[in-house]
Amino acid sequence: MQPKRFFSLAAALLLLLNLLIACGGGQVPPTVAPASIDTQPTTGTQPAAQPTEGAGTDGQPGTEPIKGLGIPLRIPQLEYGAAAQLYYTDRNRALTLMNNAGFDWVRQQIQWKDIEGPKANFGWGELDSIVADANAKNIKVMLSIVRAPSWARADGTNGMPDNITDMGDFVEALAVRYKGKVHAYEIWNEQNLDHENGGSKESIDAAKYVELLIESYNRIKAIDPDAFVISGALTSTGDSPTAVDDMLYFEQMFSYKDGIIKRYIDGVGFHPSPSYNPPATLWPDSPGPGPGWREHPTHYFRHIENLKALMDRYGLGDYQVWITEFGWATANETPGYEYGNSISYELQAEYVLGALQKTRNEYPYVGAMIIWNLNFSVLWNEQNPPQPFHEQSSFSILNTDWSPRPVFDTMQGFIAAVKAEEGR
Image (tube, rainbow, N blue to C red; front, top):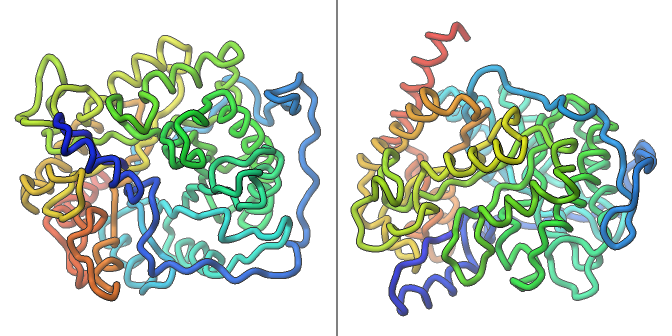
């Protein structure tokens, strides 16, 4: 989830600085250390699916889908989850609180560069325990995969790999190791943003991303056809100098090779970024309060309606949208997120409840809603010196001491009532 651009020069400059530490696509709190590298490659990796279709971009082969056109996996009833950081923390406590809230899913972002290096040498580290512990609590796992190792890019940065087969090899190793234990893979994150592409806006390429998605889908489905493959959620911003407008990027994804993406996804990832706008508002017909973060639809939760209209236009009307991050910031000291200073903990809870209700009642095409975030407030407070007012902390549904904020209690009550009504 990225900061929203204020309509003044000073705030725009602050935004440029803050994009370096943006929430969903930025660095995790520095308590998270890279996994130690295992000098032996993973054993038992099955051979990759063999290409049978025409060439992809840059002469790389495409492949036929494993499950076939028009047969995406679907979640029968709206499910709920939280983005969490389960590395090097009190994981049992975090997962117990997720059980208490009634969450179905945990979304854990993993950095490819911290797991594989050099090529075919894997340091799984804490990830084995994260996956095992979540499964033991009956919480389904989504892995959000970002940041290629430096060896996978000629320029040494951590954008998408130069050779998509390197990504294919990595996700195949994940699928082999965690078959039946990782239930969804989100392929990249906010890929319409410059720092997810090696730091260059000129490197943002929707066609290359679709080819990366095709490769990843085929590798995962060949091993674990029951795992969901979700396209990386875009940063919801149409007025940032460091990103491609999300609707333009979505359109480029959906139209590439006559809509080939339809064969290679189970759902479309999405990050609504509502700033301080209430969930019922939408520019231009029903704008939020202002000033700032107001005069563009990407500053609203209901921007999902614009995505759905685009999906319908490109023949993706039967595919579910996965909201893999949503939430409202509270008071913080991070430039670019000043709107959070207008949102109390109580108002945060009210807005999140409104989004949950609106999605359940009006957006039947949404498969999962994953709150941003569970416990980053705890992690930032454990830094030396503590940074409890970092923007990532402000989105949390827990306080710095693990106690629940009003939004946690609100979500817990809502989910319990829904599941009771639905008999699950």
